[in-house]
Length: 285
Length: 338
Figure 1 (cartoon, one colour):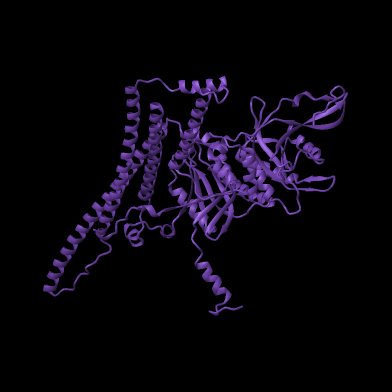
Figure 2 (figure 1 turned 30 degrees about the vertical axis):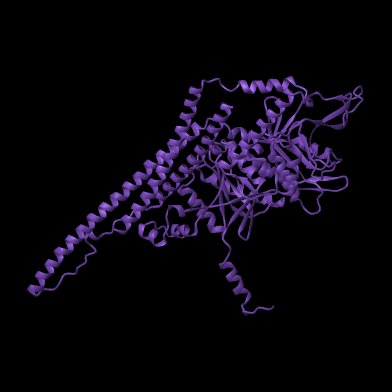
């Protein structure tokens, strides 16, 4: 993509240094829309909603598909639909504005410039997100682009799409748990204790890993790495230094509090069932 | 068509209708979960609602999409606008081939305090139009503890019948054998994702050993959450005892009235005896105009049922979180000893 002849072409200065953060919902929604696309369509196109964060990062939070028709060299977007949907979305969350558009497929295609023009009229400097639903390169590629006007002197000659870095970290998705989102079917949601158990097992596995690593280093099987060593010592040092009595007291206090709560809860339940019995008894009288 | 019993199609259809399988599972798309969470989390602590779209397939209710409602305002004009919004959104979504079939609604809640009369009323409204609908409840406050606090609820059939007749007297409840546990039915949730999404997630998200969820689960400080829970629990207990006092008051009045009735009857009978002896006409033994015979209105048990439900819900939450904390504390102890 990057052109080598910077000497002739001038980039407009505004668009460099942009990055974007894509929320998992956007990817989910695009995939869902793609699965539900009309029979004859090869790809889907739609609008990205979000906001620009104070540090200039574009936060892409929501999306919706817009019906379109495509022939060899023409792309027609249903702009009424686009505006209807936009006003509906803004009723719910006025803070989300248009930040760009998406299409499925690998990278930028011929028609993209036209659509990009359309969105340039809606917002300044839109972002173009492409999601490769066909896995063309055998991998899931999600790419973001901004357009850069290439001009010679004052005259515009072309539009170049420049790739921008994307942040695909999925904190929200992590909250739900990947176990649920990764597979095609999950029979049951994990409850409190099951989740806790899974977390503990993972923690245990991590501790085991560290043990193994330290042992390996001590015995000279693995070359030492100061960075990892510092991390480990920081982690160990972050445990507060308490005398065993103090620590026992702390833990036992905590345990007692929790047990008291459990007791209270079961007392309440007993009370409830008593109340019910008494009520029914009162009815019979 | 070989039809051994010789029933007409209509008959078959009618019986099919009658024995529609009960709703067993709600199958939610990952997309819907994300959408609900986004909407609820963004507006938390305000409570928000939205519509669920999907398909009703046998005993499974598939929820394949949803859209949020704008924040409600108590204004008729805006209410009409809300209805327009809903139609517009449905129309737009239909155009991109989303299942255009309402199957219920979702709402956020704080500390699981969702058992209200409003919820029941909304449910009844939905039920009028959709035979099988479900309410999905998401609790953002609870999700901060590393739990996916998603619940699918419906009202039980027997409760709905009773609610329609709006008759919550003790006698009726005993007749139907309905207690507070039978108001809401929780339906197990299944999650499904399209193969495409599953592929994307697997590809984009490498197997990280630690996730956000784990961090939140291993947080030691759950006290604020528990404190709020206990506070709410205490409030509910107060409400419940108020309700109970109402009943006590009612029963006291009732027994006093019965005593009065007896006394009146006794009087009337002696009077009649005297009249009989004197050969006069007898007075009737019942007198509807007498205030003593006016039936006392029995207070509705709905409120106390709902409060009871609420309390047991708080108890469950406390149990769950306290259980988690216990294991966390033991974990910390073990770590420290090492």
